[in-house]
View 1 (cartoon, rainbow, N blue to C red):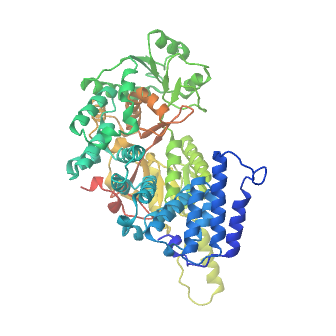
View 2: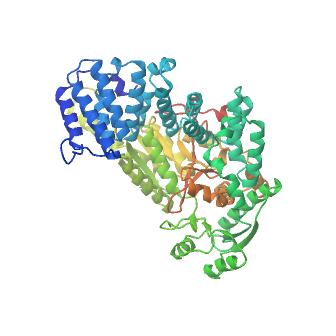
View 3: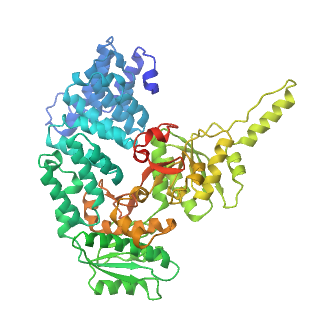
Length: 636
């Protein structure tokens, strides 16, 4: 339970109240002449509201509980509407919640919880809004008070990765949401939660659900994930779903991502050029991406969907890239996918305006604010930043990092460190290693075990009596971020237990898993949480099946095939990502969103190694929660 609920109730300090009231009063905008009649403006309304908050806080100084706490709650609610988060927290933090009625407590939890969440105190906010007291009082709380609180709860669970709790909360919100805006917002929230689940899990839940409404939701989310290879196929499936569930809330208030399908289908390019290196140093990577792209193409073709004409150009030859690009344009390309080479992406970035929309398959050193170029790739930076955000949300603040000296390792290290510092975390220890490093010594030194042993020796010299001593690891880190390939991770993780840090939460990126299940070898990395390509868990995906049937890709190349397949499903959906920046395309490489400067950002699913195999995480984790308790999918 959060310290928020362990604090001892105390009498509101009069000086604190006066200080807070003065601070609020200082923010007021005085009128130019006393008593002058000034037309009402939004600024006047805010000033009047702030004056009301000042008055309530001044009154609270003279009141005893529970009237004092109610006055402070009223002031906090006003400050919430004004967006004054800092002053709101000062006002709400001194409320004795035990003095409030259940309805008042619900308002307090919503207002104070929103302020805490805005300051990234997610665990404290979640403790507050999910207090046992609320679970016993929902039927007594009016809908207009319960609705914003339940929305906050659902958003927090989604943020913390507890998909199941978020789904359950969205179900409870449905009967409370009466207005169109509230229904649409809840449907969008539920859609975002459901589409984070792997297709296998959605299919299983659709088959097992006893609730017809939820069965329809699972089928709709499955439709959103499984048929994205072609917009027309998805649109046909959506129309069949609507006919089957004509009275469903998602028919009257469809999620935003589904509303633009008809428009996108009419705007689809009829001629697409694929510009990839099929020869030269990058030839193997280019061919894997091409085969993934064409596997998605043939999946759409086999489904009877309209497909564009695809022309493939080899950029690995000596011919200047600019000539190859212009040839594709002259041959009628309405959209271009590629190039892969980073230097060629830089050439596109340096071009003032491209003649046709282009989806590059790598990232340059900068973005581009025009709509003619989007950059998409498998950047380690995306995964490292995702690790930083998730670890911070889970309450960690002091990180230790182990990273290889390789280029990708250093890029991941830099991205994690930058994001971690921006969030407010601190990097206590960061060490680099090589493939031939002594990993026992690396971990021991990082955990300051030699210093602990030196203290033991010093004590033995000073004390004449026998001494029982167990070396202790450093106590100023609460999580470890490991950037590692499987063979490196299998050596690093066991050393943590050997050096008294077996309980330290370990986070990593998708590189830590080789791509094929090897329970015997990967038992050494049990418990590691990592960002995983959805490809791992999409065994029923037709495009993946086509790729494995035709190419039997080595695990090292699987992500490149996935990149090619996602490029096919992504390029026609770029307009929807531009119009709705909060929307995502759920692909085999992750949930894909578009930044304002034209860069695709991937957010992968969370998984954990359990009994030597990866399993997706769909419920919240705290500390060292067992994967058996947190994962539903692969334990059936």
